[in-house]
Length: 223
Image (cartoon, rainbow, N blue to C red; front, side):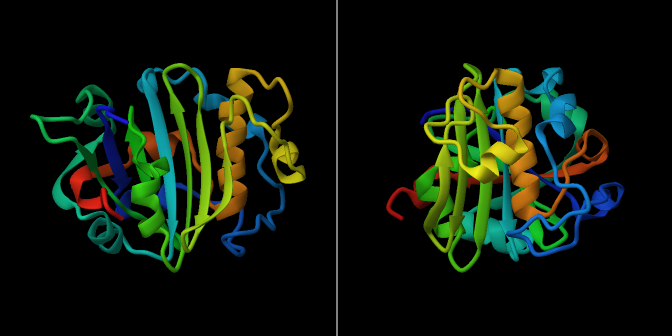
């Protein structure tokens, strides 16, 4: 998909404000209060991702390891305002993403403004080698993709706005047939929290420092 994208990874020092609901195993949300869609309805009015977004968690890899697997090159650190005001990330004739990375517990987190790197198969399959990747993407039209991969194997893959099947785990966070746009978005965040054990907050996004990294797509076309 030829999308102009901006991928960011939260800088480690800025993440202390985020207190996850659980420090349990990454793939299970043994939390005192499991996340549900209502926990993430604050995100729906946020105007900063009007053209879409993608959030991707990568387990047990440090930010440098993620960047290396993606064939990226570190650029600079920016704040939230610079992130959402800098526009999309395609430059010149080469199709590329601009990404950043940080450590959140046992996970690295990728955040994209109008990008889909985190749910692009040829990128996340090699990224998930020997580990787990959880990503959820939403486009400007409201549709998107929720993807969970473990060592290249697909565990979950569906459009949050129109899931063909609603499993018990999906139902528990708020997914249902005929789900509305706001609930599908919020439920995606809640499901990601249950799978990673890491909570996303608005203050985390706004207060964090972001490290931009250039990732040319050409590096992964044949993988």
